[in-house]
Image (cartoon, rainbow, N blue to C red; front, top):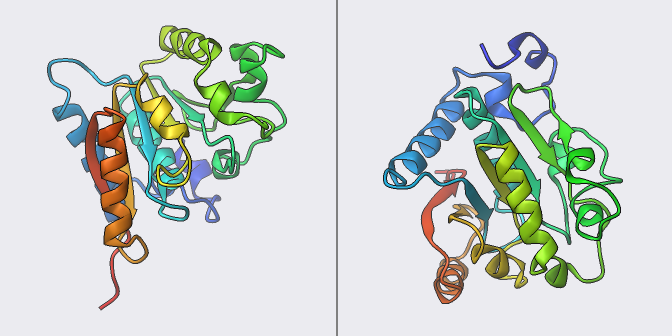
Length: 221
């Protein structure tokens, strides 16, 4: 069994639903998302995926983390990269430090291998964002970023990028040109229709391959 369920029982404060209770309905929904992604890539497996949202607070980070968990449960080696260099949150999800990460690798202060953090979940590692830089767009569009992706693909089966909201900054548009696909997360109780449409149009303009849209949360009746 690839998930350490005994430790999971003591982590009630985490948002990693699939790590706490693999039998819950929410866990099953994340497995459904995983399956749909796999079915949409029959001819060519998606190995680099961006998870983004129209705005802040839509649940993209939680979706990225839980998607990484269910993919790792299949036995695949997964790397989650916190590519939100403006408001990083992934280190909070996995309760790890963020003093060193992606930004340090991009400016050649450290190696990719040293910046990667192991998680309590077998087959799942994360690369925190590292210190918030003054020039996130330049870093993400640099040749160094392409090299990081190439190195990571030699070590992992799938790489998930938690990127900034697509309507807020240009970072996600830049990343989408280098990745196999994009998953858009919208919050049914928060995301406005016009904001969602703007996000879809922005991704289309960036020639991103939109795999699908994840509806996060349900409206209260």
